[in-house]
Image (cartoon, rainbow over all chains, first blue to last red; front, side, top):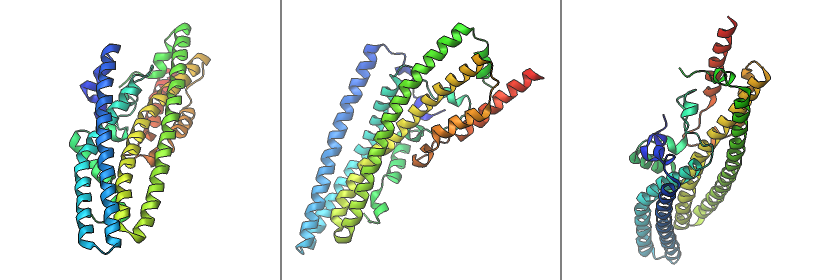
Amino acid sequence: MISWFNRSRIRSYVKLSTRKQNKMKQEIDQRHAEQRSILDSRLANARDCARKADRLQTRGKDEKAKEEINSFKLELASSQPVLNAYVSTTLEKQLLEVMSMEGFEFPDVLNDLRDDIDYGLFSVNATNELETLLSAEINPFEELGIEI
Amino acid sequence: MAKPIYDRLAKLSKRKQDALEYDHQQHLTRFSNAKEGKVSEVQSLDKKLGKLRSKASKELETSVPRALGTAMEMRHVKADLLIAQSVLTVLRSNQFYHRLMVMLIQDVKAGVEYDPSRVDNLASSEFSELVEGSILSTNLDGILGDLRAELDGHIGGNES
């Protein structure tokens, strides 16, 4: 059985009245918008630090450039928990949208035929598992050969 | 073990089979359209990620800090890509389920004996390019083998 589809919150959604479904969607939409906004702001700050570090390095001000790189690292570290939360909220938001479609069937119908179907991030169990997976999968620095 | 789908469908009246086929057809269209939209989103994010990757690689030649900024953006795009790929698997499984049901109902109505190769073709066209793009992979290859075994067993049982 797939992890996300096992959650009582998800399973009970289809049984809720339209009014309650809409309320749940609104709450998630709001949370999603807030997380996106924070994430965008941290991204802008980090890019700003990177640009400043580049400028300072070009002018030979290595110490000041190093400070900006440290600020960048701080933005990077502080954005990770928000990114994890954003991914989790977005998964739930998009899943509820799919579940609202007429004719939606829980993957159980296919699981009757086979029980080891993999549904990407929906197969991940708890929040800490999602964090571990994201930090391993979303690491462009390693991909580019940059040591942080 | 689940009761064979083929058996369940064959026991329905013609009227119920028609109604069920119509419903599954409507759902199939709905999920096919939704899936197409999601595929476009995945492609667009993948393209965006590729462009950022090239940009970061070029920046690396002259300035590591600049590449860092671009890599940070890559991280967010990659997250959105993983989410879109995961949602795509759910849409695909629903589309596949309704397509399979339409096909089985039509076969039952036409008095056609279950043909495993048709289900094989249906699945390979449905899931062929999905597996390679998914992080955790979406392995649906085995579904058809099990379904075929279930149906073969059922048909074999009836013949004997």
